[in-house]
Structure formats: structure tokens, C-alpha cells
Length: 233
Image (cartoon, rainbow, N blue to C red):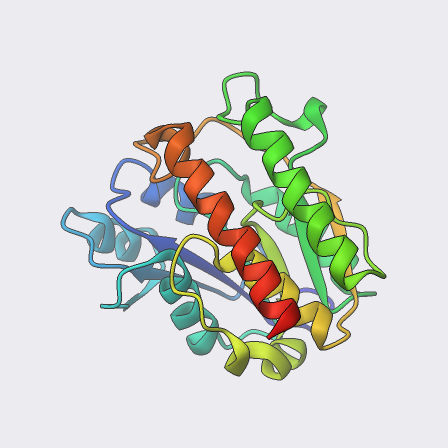
């Protein structure tokens, strides 16, 4: 609990047995009341290791990052819900950064644009960095009244009360869910701020960045299409 607010952490997982145990332990901070690991059709020992580390494991049979996150958000009981990754790219102590800013906001987004906090061996080269910045500025241009630098950063926090205003608007089940969440929050006039987070080399095989620039480029195109679709539909 953080200043009277119950805190939930949601972690989507697909075959993350190399990292999930340490991730759950790392995010088991004193302020965290529950950790939910969403089993997105894992074929390895991820669910077993997550439970062993102390997490609640729920199943999402619909394959995709967005589907997994949406299931976790629906089941989380906290007044504040934090989303993070299973691969140890983010660190547990940074939940306090998000919580410090959530006191004055509805949603707090992490950003990986502070290079001093990004490990040299992290998969955050110029292609990914500038691609995320471009898409962030595109959202900023169409929706205004917010400063965005990294819509691809998946570690973020949202108040349960704010989530209830937008959760039924979510449609994306794939990797481009992160910008949809931001867009719907902006359309609902939620107060959003960004905070720099630590970012490290992932443990295990990446689903997007490790698959090469071409797949990341295709995800970027889906994000851009989503922005125009949401704006002009």
C-alpha cells in the first residue's frame, strides 16, 4: 500500500521462464499489494515459477500483448495499477517514481529517453528510440495538451478510477496496445505525465526488438494507422 492506496502490478508473460521469478521478486516492493502474472499461452515453466515467486497467475487464451494486459487490468484489485514487463528490462524500485507522480495525475507513463538511465547493452538503439519519439509526437500533435516522448515504454501506472473511464474503449489485442491506452486516456481528458525510468538489457528472447527492425517497423506502422483511425473515425 502506498499512502492509503492499494497497489497492483500486472505482468504479461509469454514463455519468460528465464526471468519471471526474479521479476516477480524484484517487483514485490513493500508498497505492492498484489502481483498478477498473465499467462498468455506459455508452453514453458513461466506460470509455475511466477506462483513460486508469490504472484497470482491468471490465464488469457487470446494471444497477444494487448489481450494479456487488458485481462490483467480487469482482474487487478488495486487503487493504482502498474504495468511492467516480465523480462527484467524494468526495475522494481521504479514503482516509487510512478507512484510519486500518480498523486497528481490519472496516468503516469515511463519514458526511456533519459540516456543516463538506459543501460548500454539495452535494446534501445537509435532506430527504436527515434521511432518511439516520432509516434509520440504524432499523438501529441493530434491530441495536444500533453508532452509525450516514448509511447513504446510499457511500464506505466493508472488509477483504477481513471481506468474505468476508458477500459471499455480498448480494442487492440496486439503489440500496439500501448499507444491505444494513451489515446483513449487523452480522449477522456485524463491527466497524464511522463517520468524517466531505468531500462536494461532483457533476459531471454525479445518478441519484437530481438526479431529485427522489420518487425518493429511493422508494429510502428500499426501504431501510426491506429492513431489516424482513432482520430478520424
